[in-house]
Image (cartoon, rainbow, N blue to C red; front, top):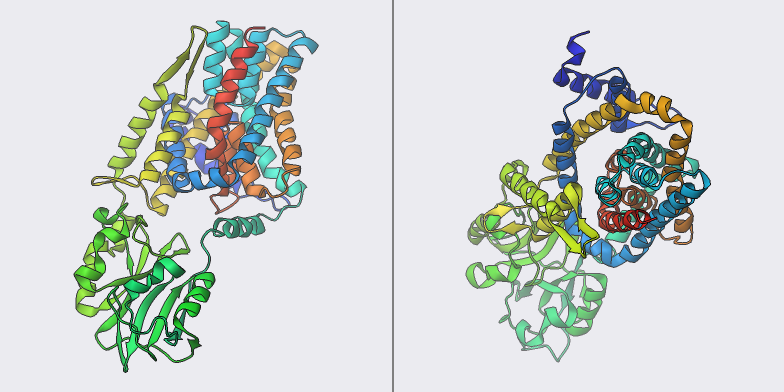
Length: 528
């Protein structure tokens, strides 16, 4: 059929068939979007070619959106369990390199083809480039081509079936990860207090340094039946009712400072209101809350900030992010001005400005091409994937540069990620399928067996090492394995199993470590 040889037609046929097959469940297991690569292997075997440019575009979009999503939480994640994840990545790379070294002697294989098998088994393009440079042999590319197909497929199958084998509950893992992620952000509550402590009567809230002493916020004060939104100059009188907002620990401290809890209500006066305002104004993003001088200008008080499902106690140093929800109390007239400051425009949140995406990708590509030379024999660069991923994480962490917002709405991120992933899997699969049978006929099963061993063995070692690190979440473990194996399709397989970003965070944490370590190991092997 001539039409199937048309690349754009074949691309979407592969994607359609991939989704159909991916939705088929066998004993509760499905391949989801990862099935595209298996369909592509068959098409590639029969001569269908997807232009290489689509592979690059797909890879760039997928990696960039992963970086944008993971960036804000990456640094916190690295602080929490970065050492454990880096240790697992080291286990993966060193065990694979050691196995490659043993295969060199046990099967009497030339070192260039061994380094090719190693980089193919770990699907590492930077590793391949380093191996070619150090050995200057075409055998590297042959070894890479032999091991690469199973390097892609093996990781996908491993991360798909391993949770089933150990009977891991993915949904519970999502809950556990969410719980651990919010440990630094305790639940924010509110209660009403009666001013009874003789030491605070007649003093202003500013003099008492309430926020500093207790980490709680006083959002309302009722005196003689009249309720106001307080400021630092508000004087507390005996019998006043106070509404306080904060964590359980903060509220217990403010009780000691102010007086006992009461069930009496502290209603807002007529003309005052409390409203949740969505941060969509570019000028407000990445700006410290204290910079707005809300009380001085509008007699408005921020009682809490809600970000990604987490309530944050407002402080003058908290920098707002696009999509934050700010709880504000003030009079109705001033509320209109406060809303203008923060935006509160749902449409702006859903709109996507593609300039920051394009600019970020350009910076990522340029950064990836930069190389560091350590003497005449060792040169290192992050490459396309590493450069784009690193820049995306940095930019999303920065949040805003002048009028440019580097973050993306969740829906836009998901759409670009899936689009890029589909292009990438279809192109990679057809390329691998084109040479799979021929390579097998020419070199026999030995090289395939060694390549498969170099894929499976390090992942198995990572699982065994993780057994001694009992606190590692299964989604974090799978993300760590795919990052250590530098496997983008593997991450896609995990990503399709869960709505959590646990795997993406782990992948982003270990990927740079694994990439650098593999390049070093390849260059060491090249000297033998």
